[in-house]
Every structure is written in C-alpha cells, then in structure tokens.
Image (cartoon, rainbow, N blue to C red; front, side, top):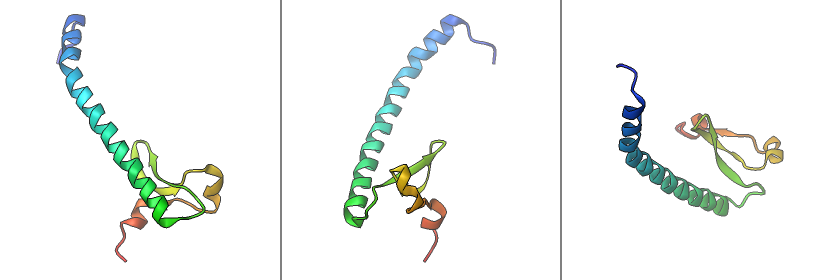
Length: 86
C-alpha cells in the first residue's frame, strides 16, 4: 500500500468515524454492565475490602482489592485460578 495523501487520509477518517463511535458506545455499555457486576459481587460477598476486575494492558487478569493498601491482605485472584475446574 502506498502512503496516503493528506486528502485521502482525511476522507478515510470521515469513513472510519462511525465505526469508532459504535465501538465507543459498545465499550461504554460494557463498562456500565461490568460496574454493575462489580457492585453485585461486592454486595453479595460483603467482605472488608472492595473488589474490582483487575486489568493489565487492557486485559482482565483477575479480581483483586480496589484499594492498593488492602492488596497486602487480599492478593489478586488470577484469572487462571478462577477458570480452574474444582
């Protein structure tokens, strides 16, 4: 592929924008649902620590304490541990 001219790049951005906007909406809806799930998890477990889904480099790698200082007492539960069969 040849390098795009400024005009072609401008035209391409206009065509890409609707897809970007749809993706942003999907992401927003996902995060709203994930926040609701975290709240449900914390309400049902009723621990002395607020838990969150823990992300590294954009990937969820487990569940851990939201508060950094409480991570010493409640270490990250890795995704591989949660996906193990009992």
